[in-house]
Image (tube, rainbow, N blue to C red; front, side, top):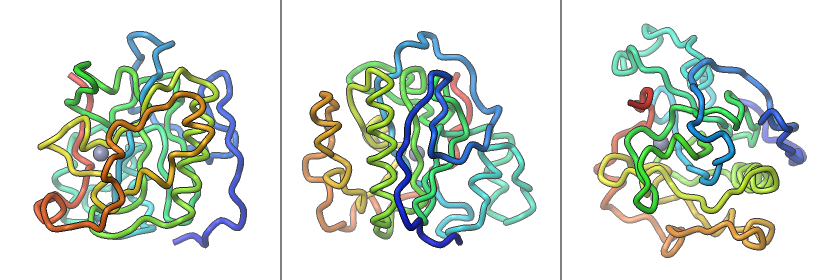
Length: 224
Ligand SMILES: [Zn+2]
């Protein structure tokens, strides 16, 4: 695993949708947005591969189509899946970008936000390296907030939601340890970014969802 970053990079999304300050690791797991101007939702996820293990590099290889399915027995369930979020934030705080924000990533699957289906069409997906069962690192929240602010400066971002909020009953990430209050910065609030699912977030995690949760959010595949 990488050492934590000493200093938080500042992020700036360029006109082509790539972030200055992030490590680019381009993936082909995308297609075009129906309306390229509509980049209005941020979807936060968690992921680890193999489930529960940090710093393996497997998420990066999975999202770029280079994961060997024989690397771990649990990967058999990933066969045939083509998945990528736009961003992945490692435990060290390092931000890796797989897709330009201008294109449609395959991260949310069947989903809806405020009655609107197919969130991949109009969202940016950000995966935190983590699980439903333990806290995220402080530096991950710092990186996430900084990326979200950069997105809000470039795109008409209206809201941020968790994967479980837009695919309830099907997805549990980013999980009960995810604390929205850690990313509700003044910069985002002043730009009118809403956090409709933040109420009650950050409470001490109970049993409930986490206890029944699948271990990974990896199985998303491409949109229908
Ligand atoms: Zn997810």
